[in-house]
Image (cartoon, rainbow, N blue to C red; front, top):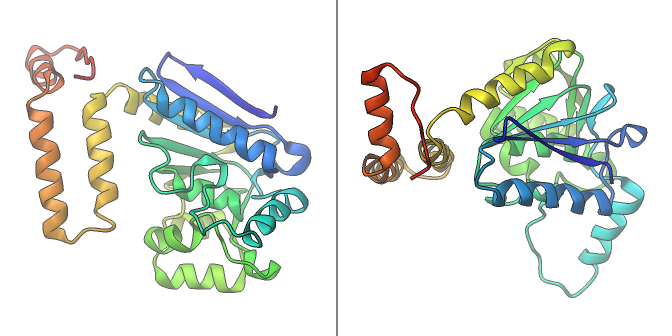
Length: 261
């Protein structure tokens, strides 16, 4: 199976799509395998953050393997099964993963590949990377969350431009419009992603989860409701052992020993 799962520093999951001969596209089998990798990450309390990348150097992910995956989705669409949320690769649904995720993008990042990246919390890319949601050219729409996440990340105008035309855009466009956080030379991409992952993994785990939850909530809540959510989460954190340890360690000028409680 060409979905690799590596554990780094006992706390970081490095999930790698390894189908360069298919531009790292996902057929049904690999879609399920990637979903299994995310489930493994989510269920392991020792793992604090995940990095998603791909092998081959030409493509991060070109989305669904057309001949296999779309036929599978078409069969579902033509069946009597009720409409359900499409979770491409087990990442693009609503709340599939509850811990921080980083996408390390190198090369072609289109269709479901861009939807996987948009579902990650932080996105790094090489200057050679390209981005597109070309599904309308196939008579369908970006069904793995692309129509929902892109506008929140890059704004309505950018989302309409990309999705309705299906055009491809370069890494500078992606950086300027918030699709990626920063551009990193190809040789340093993995190291840059792991550096951020290690920073996250070293912070209070309860605080990281709560802060991520509060930021994600800001997309959908009014300011008043979002501030209430933030305050409720902060109240829980202030009552935790980790919060006391964090303050004590700061005063004593030593690394905090967090235990997640």
